[in-house]
Image 1 (cartoon, rainbow, N blue to C red):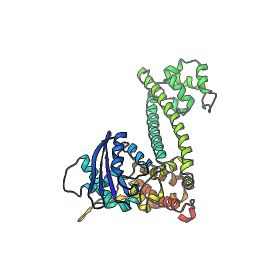
Image 2: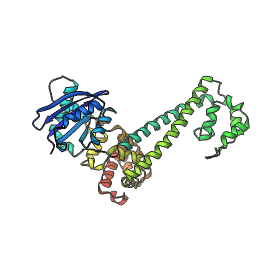
Image 3: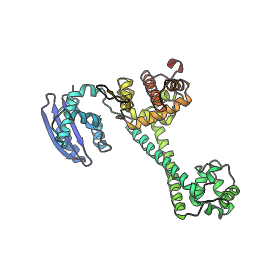
Image 4: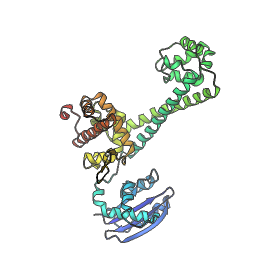
Length: 392
């Protein structure tokens, strides 16, 4: 039974720890550096107490909490990550406006003392933490690729506007050609043999356009010569090629790790037509385990897609999403909802029903997202594959 409650306030180079017993008596309070010496100081403070009696909590603070959290978890200490919003709201219960690291650590410890029973049910060892880190890195790489493609399209509209009308400029061979010859002016003076060497790679598909056609388009182009934009285009294409290679590498690692950690759950999610492997892995990596959530409502709140309504007297505000949850998971469920209304007859029918009831497009999509979360929660809890007839 937990009887020692430790709150830790983490910053970039240090942390502050405060320990309370079950009667709220302060056992220790100190600051330490975020290194091995600081960890040793914390372990010395915890050493007098049985490990199974200690419960530790810290706020999720970007990346800074990860080394300390991982070190304590590796030593089998029961350690919780708390949403900073919970601590902020709890701190508001005090009328005092004092804010220091020691005060914050005490607030976390006090919150843990008062709410440890419901919190303990959500204690997360999270064996897929590495998977979550990888999927978030993939999300970043994908966003950079999308931005680069958008920039490249704008630059091509100036340097060679005719080319995208006849061929996808993002095929590997065309990108390599444009990286070396980033404008119609550069291409029209390029030998046919050189262009053919780009269009006929030893590996991969050949583009559905000839070297002669590209040269003809270049010679008849209305694009003005712009050396600055040619240089920028070449640089952006090089960066795009680099990021595309990194995306393939990280996908390989993610799939291998997912097969070891969440193979069964992945099979369950992808049994829903419209949910692909990538978004299924991202979804599972972000939630950690369905057992962390007592109900679909808890999962919906964790995503931040639960509605909020402000009412006061005769005034009734509009219903909005809380957006207080996991922004990565919110983005993923939005993408999945878009896919299932296109490819899954059950959710497509539900989406059309909500539209016919007068919901605008975006609200109808989030209505689908709510239904989808309830379905996924049931599937993962019961560990069964999706059956469309059960949702009718």
